[in-house]
Length: 246
Image (cartoon, rainbow, N blue to C red):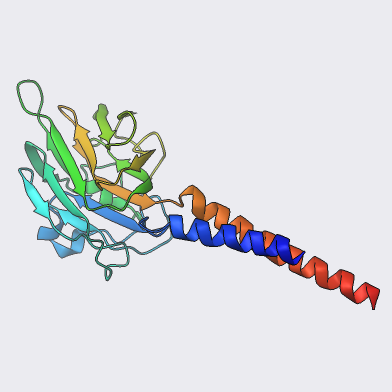
């Protein structure tokens, strides 16, 4: 029994050692797009897809070559060490109260009011280039909804140095007044390599309201939790048997 626990403990130490260099699971970086920073009353403080939480959102308000260094995590206090280079060769907009299906007073109105827009044919596509990320798996959430009554298709690609680029296509009619997956936001999971880079390439005539990037547990962390549970179970089982013998 002692040998078995020793082996499990050694495995857990190995997993922990291998997990170094990954972002902490649950770390979130939020990006809000549009002119919201020009009016503090329009800055979004909600949780996005993590509804019911209060979070900090980094503000991107310029459409051409905007650089943000050392983005804050969602707590608004912790420096992430991650930088963003953004280029959206179109306009930065904020809809009026009647320009969006998200009505005044709705919890996610401010997130979906503002957006960065790429122009149509003959213009350059846009991008969001993140650097300084820890190697590992990330969930990427993209928010996009056109103005009220306008039909739009979001067309972009998420790429890293690991694996093939991930294509994203999101169709929406601009008429939904609440966050709905695969309607005005979409989730994709990617793996970031040792270079720490993640790029979102945005097609022509697209709107981006916001982006959330969430670090997810890499396999060794999950194994470590399982090993811990096995050790506790074996320890309690051994104690129970000893008491019966007495």
